Image: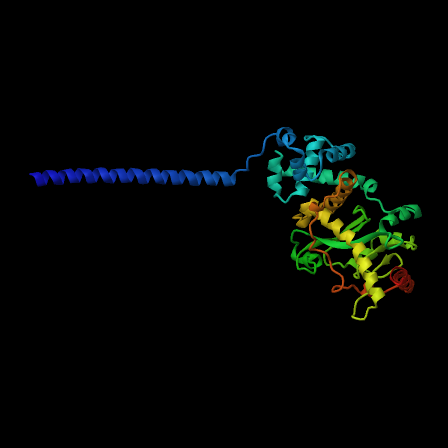
Length: 372
């Protein structure tokens, strides 16, 4: 009887244990299914937008945080707003919100969706804002990016290059990595580093302000060709007393002084000339490093619209100059630019064709600067 009772008790306990296990498994399965449904819903739905970020959160930022996020001080932002207000359409979003959205987009590398969510707007609205603000900055570009118009303007710029007389600025090219192109267009846009890029030619004065910017050429186009087809090449023909400094990728002309090519037989004077030339030309490398360090979107611009991309590049150049006018240049914002086109190893045919008058002009400078 006892054995029977024990067996009956064991049987009932086994039934109870099995039921408990089934309940636990059922509960775990339900939790797992619920979690999968939640994750699926989260992935398929649009991310939650930040509510009133510009109205409530931005005013709470300290000055350092504000500049870190938007790449400008509040004083500079006020100046930008005053300049752009006549060129912007209000419509749904206030001017300052549109400008802040653009500054954040160009100053950071967040995804398009993430930026739109931060400012509580749709991706379509953000695209319109970027297009609108970049166009407005393009419209004021002639007031901010100024190439010298006469001899007096040139003489003013020369003061920043006293070690190399008659120099009004330095020129160089850089790449803006961009979204991949279709197979038909890819060969034109692939630069010598092997990726699709937009070519940008920057000319600056000694204080790193940009006096000319030219963009729109595919990455496969050489510095010399871009310069030859740019407006400043034509303008420098009228200022032959003055010149720009460029690396050996450029042709030696009356309007642009290049270094002596080193084939292993340079004289001491020519070596010294090259050193002075390189040390002064360094300002354009610093200028491009500051431009890309401040506006980080230029390091990899995922944009299929070439026209919009060109506008944004010029817009950043306008902002670059405004910041230099209103704020001190911060070397911490500069980052080495690894996309310079180079000089010695990538020569265009025209870069080897030197003007005889330009050769004599360079030799004269070499003697005056290094022969005494």
